[in-house]
Length: 198
Image (cartoon, rainbow, N blue to C red; front, side):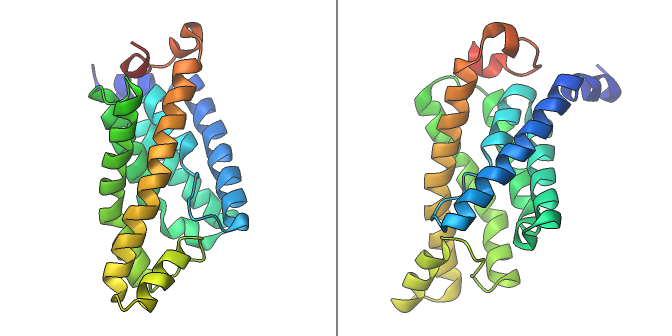
């Protein structure tokens, strides 16, 4: 299959529609969590859903576009984390591709893998662009660790991994449960859904 044919298959009309809905879902959930200053994010459920149904490239693009659009309309900090959102979609799609979303415990494992992958990108952004403070509920964890004598870099590492571990495991489980709950007729319209549903 040529690259053009693969792109046409991966980015069908229904996939593009799903991506648009997922972007709105991500931004709405992310805004609600941000306003409530919760120590988790829940702003990548749509990204992971797209990754499970349509593959890693569609998931990556959904994550990237979510944060860029969100950054333009209300929260510039979100735009800075666009590479992190891209990694979330890409890694979730790869986990699904290799069969790590078939059972609930595999979804948990995928959440851990996603966390480790995104941490490589998120930690430098949080430290060097924002000095460890981004205005999210996770800042409380960083502040506490700094108050106990930790240096900024180690405080951010602990914050990013701890906070994202909880968030991405919950996100992966929710996305897995949603896909499992969809009808076979609906999931059959997506190129990669069988990596989760079968």
